[in-house]
Amino acid sequence: MDSVTVKELIDAVGLTVYSGDKHLEDRKIATDDISRPGLELTGYFDYYPQERVQLFGMTEISYAHKMDPEERLEVMDKLCGENTPCFVVSRYLSIPVEMEKAAEKHGIPILRSKLPTTRLSAKMTDYLGGRLAERKSLHGVLVDIYSLGVLITGDSGVGKSETALDLIKRGHRLIADDRVEVYQQDEQTLVGEAPAILRHMLEIRGVGIIDVMNLFGAGAVRSKTDISLIIHLENWDKDKKFDRLGNGEQKVRIFDVEIPKITIPVKVGRNLAIIIEAAAMNFRAKTMGYDATKAFEDNLNALIQQNSVN
Image 1: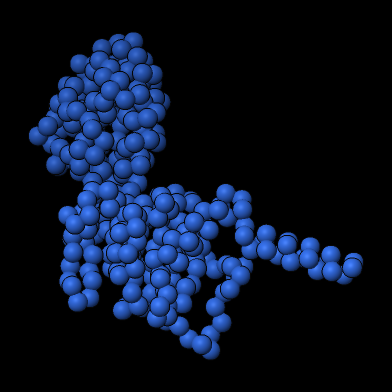
Image 2: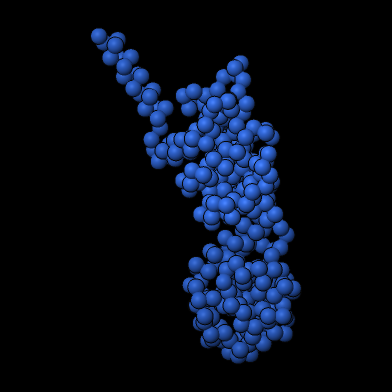
């Protein structure tokens, strides 16, 4: 998405409109960077990022109130750039009259929040970062298993959606079926969510489209989750060697994030939901410092050493 309207930011972050409600749909935000115009209040505008949301906290507002009215009006007028989307004031601080006059003159909304400045900045950055980030559409099913985002991939017809349905019945939550929209939130985090048209929907061959939230309740779905693990379902081939010890770690790079990948062979009679559930729990144990494969190898080495001594 190239931009977000100020109205969308208000709805997402819970801001209140102080003035300029006629321009909420007109003003666009095209960057997730937030500006706190401290230097600009002193008159330094050489590198003023006018295209950013301009956030005023306790420091900026208290400094502005100490300025001369004429100087304050001049600075506020300069702050109203052609591409400035809005002014946001934290803690419900009092807004200088000159800011209101300049914003009204240039058609810039003034918004307020009761949140402290740092928390408000983080909240706006998270929302804008998610909305404005580059996205990819991946074929697969995204499920929350014990608060672990697991992306199930595989060829069409291998049983991804049926496995997801079994996982939902076991108490886990669906995020997306068939198409998963992913974006990079930061250097280490990849987030997945469903396209709006497919939200809460699951396609089961022979049954059709089912609404998971309607059938299983709100606790069976999530809107989005961080992707921690990819499980690839692959049809069984007796001539192919599959990992048996868990030491053949694979990784998939999506954007700039590497996600661990496990390949599970699909064969008649295998309960894929239980296997994937166990794989997710085993992966979580590894991230917490316990590696069952290493424990097995240590036990094996100890046994070999014991037998060689005897």
